[in-house]
Amino acid sequence: MEVFFINLIAATFRVSTPILLAAIGETFTERAGILNLGIEGIMFFGAFVGFFAADLSGSLWFGLFLAVISGVLSGLLMGLFSVSLGVNQHVSGLGITVLLTGLSLFGFRLQYGGRSTPPSIEPFQQINPFANIPILSTITQQYLLTYITFLVIVPLAGWILYRTRYGLHIRAVGDNPEAVDAAGVNVYAIRYSTLAIGGGLIAAGGAFLSLAQLGAFSHGIVSGRGWVAIAIVIFGNWIPLKVMFGALIFGGTYALQLRLQAMGLKLPIPYETFLALPYVVTIIALVVAGRNASYPAALLKPYRRE
Image (cartoon, rainbow, N blue to C red; front, side):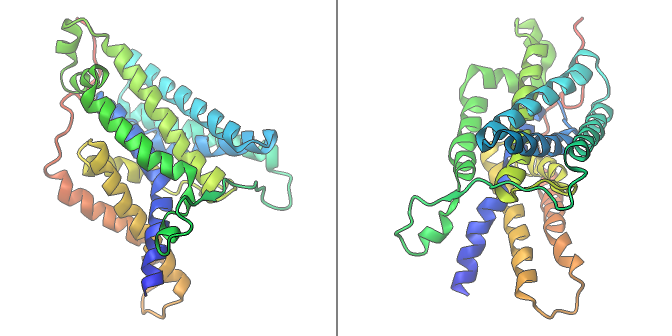
């Protein structure tokens, strides 16, 4: 039983990584007043671009770099619709998801459609800085991207949002863009920049799936993680540290259901129940925490200069 829980903790951090990357990216965009429903498509596109680039170049890091660039460009596209043109954010976000998903599947079919076996690459290898310490060595055997996400990106995001002038501008734009504009701050530039940052992180979350966790690309690689990330942002009240805990809750539940299935327990319930468990837990957490969520006042509201 002890081994089971140790392995579960280790798996929780790995499974949480792509969700957390996407959720931190979405936190930036929503803090500036933009709901990016293109998150699912951007993750999917990032997974494909990362895999495709790594497969052609032989470099996983180059694949990750291009995936991030694809996310930045996708975020800027969202900015064109929602910031410059003032299109409904729900419509533009869902449109981007459909567009990027279609482009990814079309590109995948062009490049790999004639193969008799699914394509795969050698993924990122896990590292273990505490390999000689019992118990801890199992938990700390993680991907470098996991360490970067939890130890660098999360605290850096918190510092930027709450300890820098730029972060103050982001939060102010998300609450009262008119006042920020009157103070001489470019509302459009702030929103574009957060969409670019958010898109890059979201795509990195998708690339983690294809370059590290799976070492392959498939049609169901994202499996709704983008939508879960949006729920986790609300659960975390747009605070990076709390968002991290929300991602760990989902990751832990997801890892638990995988292990329960692997154990082959003879339970009088269909296996689909295990598959739904992480999403049910996420919905429950969202319902409980969403009542007291402090939504950015200008979220979903396009800004037009007087």
